[in-house]
Length: 178
Image (cartoon, rainbow, N blue to C red):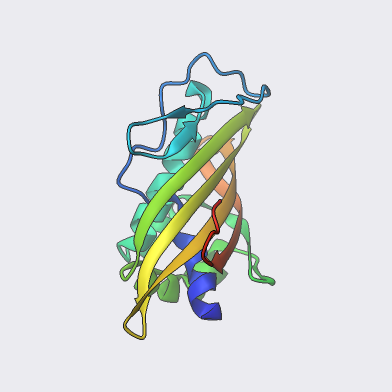
């Protein structure tokens, strides 16, 4: 079960729903106490200036779920720092050469439901925080995993690149929510 929770963190930013709403009136440092919610979709608080950074996060997640590690790696800074379940990977090469393969295989078995996404930009840095539920089967029984993800994305000459990822998850108990 620990492996399920660990891998569940990855699925967080993958969703069939659009990753951003037209929130052009939002300011990057003002808390919006009532973020917009799409009908039957996730709660989104993503100002227009953060949309390109969110798109980088989405491309990474979608490519990883599809097993396209080269495309996923194109969204990572070469020196990305990935923290997950008490462990660390210190480069894109380290992650893509090892852990990413298992993550991609796991993601093919899960249904990911994005619950909430918040993003903000400050200068050439953006952060994208996502909360999701992953629905999967373990030993023939349904399991739901609550997952959180934070990605720090930096604007470069080559576009937005993910420079830091932190994944965290736990199995959902009755009555749990994000």
